[in-house]
Image 1 (tube, helix red, strand yellow):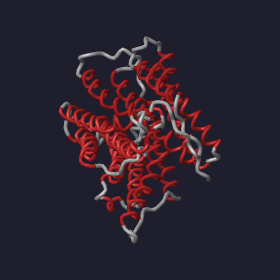
Image 2 (cartoon, helix red, strand yellow; image 1 turned 180 degrees about the horizontal axis):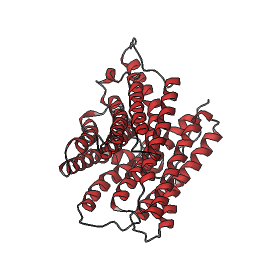
Image 3 (cartoon, one colour; image 1 turned 120 degrees about the horizontal axis):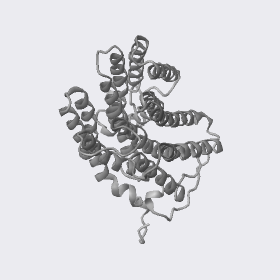
Image 4 (cartoon, one colour; image 1 turned 120 degrees about the vertical axis):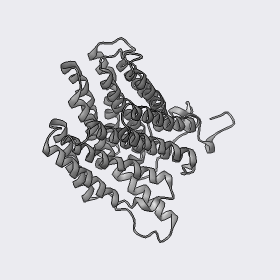
Length: 395
């Protein structure tokens, strides 16, 4: 595939590439949303939107924060997949406005009814799905159509969440379906980028790097298919023996995938190691949900291992690496970024291991500090032009 020559972008740098507005937005949102949740949880303010406080918290972590990271990743990766021009300029501005409108609508700030809130919130991922499909089809990159399917299922989970709250008052099925789809996205995308980045680092480190990670293959496809079946059983029938057994087996399967990626060999590269550690919360969370099906552990343990450690840790690691790499900076974490990831990982452990309310407050503080470091470190990186491309006029 020939390399596309990209003309210089003359608009605001923050809208020059997909990762910039969405990674920045996700980081700022992560810093604000958890302290706000703690204020709501402690009863100091009330949620004005259509959801109960707990549903609002779950929804905004699943479909608010996470959707921004997914959009940033896709609009950065797809030009590499297809060889086509990246989405930038006014389309990115419009998509960012859609994402912000969804957050305001769900919070009740726009004064909309439930149906209008659903439309405002779901419009963002619907637009992402359409644009991603157009790009992949135009680039004839048929192998990545499975990513489109995952995105559309993620959108379906969000619609289910809204409809269920309208009908039943709370989104039990929508909540589980949302978790299931994000787990699948991380399993699919993480299973491609983690062994690839690990291999690249090992080869660069030594001309004779020894055992290398196994690339995405039949074992990964089978384990992902089994995990999808498992998660669908869990969505429909969570407190059952079949769900419990299948969840534990799925966790073991994802753990086996991790062993094939040789993560223990990259301990001296925190930026690569973070990806392995973040993904490690996925099998841990699946096993914890399996124990919850037998009422051995609370379901909250599995949810938070997946949500804080898996979703939060993996997305933070991906955002840091992509933001450094795509702005021409060295792929080195340094003490600050290493601390940021450690805070989020420890937040997951604290939320599960320390009793409520202390564990809740500790986890919230660690999460906020971790993402606060990310925003502090990357606010200018994401809003200013790449250093090598700066012109005397600031472009």
